[in-house]
Image (cartoon, rainbow, N blue to C red; front, side, top):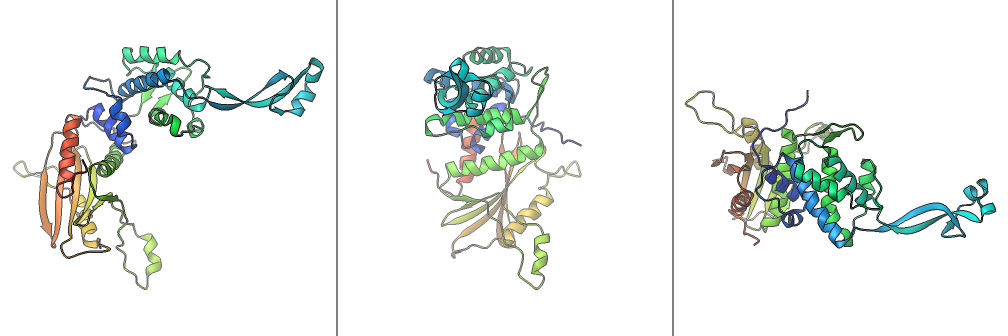
Length: 358
C-alpha cells in the first residue's frame, strides 16, 4: 500500500527553500524570488521559478555547443561516410554523405527546458498566468527540437563554468520529471506529493547543508563503531549499522543530531490530562548514539550533546535533560513560519554553542 503524502501545512515557498539548500542552490534560489504570493502547489511555484530563470537565460543568450550533423552535401566536409555515399549513388549527383561538427542551440539542456515548458502548460495545478508565460517562452526556443523527456536525456547534459546557471534549472526540471505521472500525448498530468519518508530525508539533508552554511563547525555523517571485536566477529555483518544523520564538531564541543519528520512529532498522551511524550524509539536511538560515540581526540573540557531535531508545524518545543551523564536535547523547528523566521530560528538553535559564520 502506498504511503499517504504529507498533510502538514508547510508553505510551498518553504519546501522550495528546503530543496534549494539540499541541492546546494540557495544562492540561485534567493536570486529568483518566490515572494509571499499564493501558489496552487509546488509545481505552480516551480513554473514561476523556471519562467523567471529561463527569461534570464534568453536575455543573455541560450547556451550553444557543437553537435554532430550527418547529411548529404556537395563536396566533402568533416568525415566522409563511404558506405551511405556509395550505397545511395550520391557521387553521381556530385554529393557525399558527411559527418561534421556544427555549433547549435539544439543541445540537451535547451531541449529539456523547452520540453518542460511545454509539459507545464498541460498541468491543471499550474495557474493560468504561469501557463501562459510557459507557452510564450516555449516559442522562443527556435532551433531547439521538441523531444520527450527521459533519464538518458538528463544524463547527457554537460554543465561547465560558462553555463553553470543551467544546473539549477535543469535540476528543477529533473525533479518535476521524476515526480510527474504524464502521458505526453494525451495527458492528464499529476504531480506526486511528498510522502512522509521523502520529507524526512529532505529535512535531514536540508539541516546538514544549512549547518555547513551557517556554523563554523565541521559537518559530517559518520558511522558509529558499536560492535565489539570478539570471536564471533564474522557474524557482525548481519547486524545493523549505526549511522548518524549529522554531527557538528568544533574544538569545544560535539553535537550529534538525528532529524525526524512526522505528522505529529511527539507521541499523543494516553490520558487527557497527560503531557505529550518524546517518542520512545527515537529516544532509544539517540541514547545508543550518545553511549557509543567515542571522540578521536577527546579533551577534558570537550562537551558532547545529542539532539532529536523535529520538523514541526505550529508545535514548538525545546527539552533538555541528562541521562547517564550525557546531555540530550529534544527540539523542533516550525516549518509553517515565514522563511526568514525559520532561517533566523535555526541559526540561533545551531549556534547555541557554535559561532555564527556571518
